[in-house]
Image 1 (tube, rainbow, N blue to C red):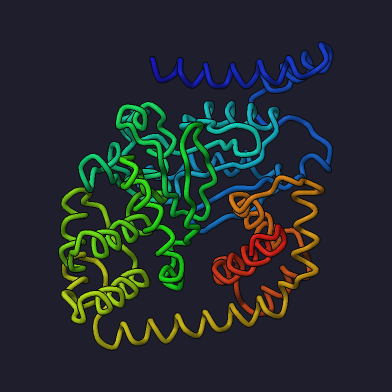
Image 2 (cartoon, rainbow, N blue to C red):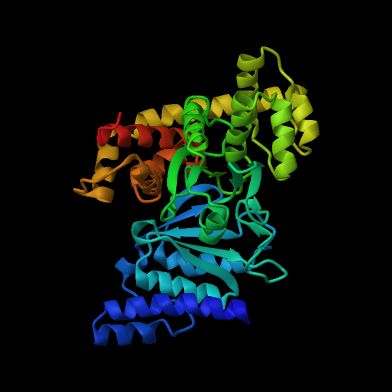
Length: 406
């Protein structure tokens, strides 16, 4: 019963904020409209409005008319499935309240977080036990309960849920965060955040930016602070940064760093691309490896990276990366990026590198709206997930140069 009341309280707050923002007549009409069970009657323009969402496959957009069906599809999924949660971005108060209502009717978890343009709404399948406070799964996989302490009194590893848990952050006196997830844009008041902006793909290069992350951690430690390193789950991207820190600053071998981190947080599993780069770091530091890819597959069962299978996978990955890079070079032009930039930010003057996430989401969302891009993708027999990394890199480079931070 407590959970149900909490859900109602969230919805009521959003309803109240929306109603008082309207004229009395408009507010009354709105409250009557959302009392209906299904999607309310809207104009074609309203129903065609594009809504930014984040799924396990990456950031994308859908038409508002598709949102109710999407929520119903989540309801029908097994809560143990990795894609049983969706993050909605940039909803207006009316849309946010409507999504809360639909999620409640479908028996789903729903929660708004953040303020202003950073406000997001998360909808997910409830666990079989029905406990809201400690869900067993989210859209990215298994979520343990709370942060994992890696270095006592200094370094914690966790998930996006931990990054927005103000009570847990305050109780552990954590005032610094390293966000390794490109798609996560939430900010917490009173917390200094350093963004790594990594995608959880085998083609993501981490060696070029990892020193900035290590330097940030060094500064926090020198000042006697405590820091949480997180991605979406605390399993691959953030675990890779933590392992790299242990290798560089605690003089651990890669095997020792993985063992220590896994003992603290048993779900960790850096992806194969990250592991290969960590192996390269170890060779630079120790001149000899403590672990092979084959041994890693044994330590982390379910990862087939041996013999011909690995070689074929690497060759296929390379071909896909080359095709994706060529596609983006041909179609993601400076003029198009400039057009999207002004559509998103207009004449805003106080832009910073932390705003790059909004821009990348908008660029990827344009692939669902721009006919020429959609046709080009179809002709190349590719989808957005195939070109996600080069699009992110091009968008980020353009954004940084645009605001004069290059």
